[in-house]
Image (cartoon, rainbow, N blue to C red):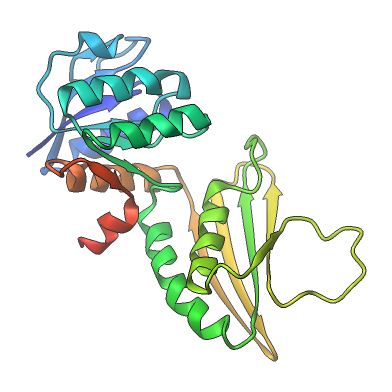
Length: 253
């Protein structure tokens, strides 16, 4: 049984993970960390991570960027691996992540969905076939109207997966307005749609002469990210120090 600390337990994702873990016989939440202890989660909640004295095998983080510095320090001192899901980290914080990974295992991915990360793997094979055959490549992502960044980190990860397989020869293009010329061969167009309550839709299009192949992933709720984080936690527990991502979780299945 993997013993897990939920960092950011009273946030939306923390609560989704809490409910899913209750149904999983291979993992349990032994403690939670949140600035507001506002509900009975069935496990002790600490408002400061340094007050947590509960033995654990792994920490899953879905909190806020401001809390990541203390999380990394605590993880390094206690030797507890971290599944780091908080986004919007500064360059300095990302450097701290790398430094801390020399002391303890850290798993960080642009998207925690098992589906997206399987798609990243499949795209490498597809790119070698279609890219080398001269097919045009486009990435289209859709998210809810409140999402601030564009394109999404996942869209960039999908483009990177394709580009890596093709020797990183492609340029990313985010806006074609004002251009009056045929589409260059070595570019990947990345488009963002924002509207309504769309959780997340990502399409990778390989457009050739007389045929189009589309790889598509749709998230209907945030539980897909929670499920991926739980699988990552089970994978990371007991791993040696180093940086890991969801590709490692997929490869282990």
